[in-house]
Figure (cartoon, rainbow, N blue to C red):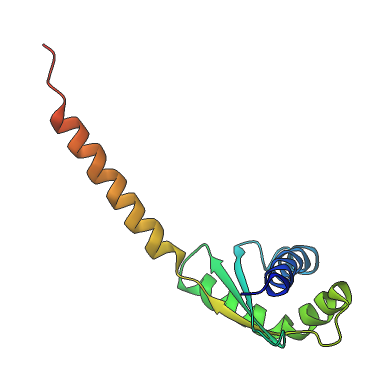
Length: 121
């Protein structure tokens, strides 16, 4: 990935998050923008998001992002000042699965550590 792609992706990620917080604070409270990846031609940007909550919260977040995508793109385009504003494609990240795996590994290490220590009477 080129330096320009990285800079644009970082800017898009920051501005999408900021725009959500400013424009739709109550509805976007459970949404975290996790990543942004820009295509080599800078025409598309895949924006990853994670949602804290149950299936209803996930569904509401997807609906919100679909509804406000063009408004966010317009705001981001004004800040980027590029010839073509990237099309925003929102992709849900499954960070909860990764968190669960890390927590399970930490629990296993803690259990092994307790078992390996001799008991002091």
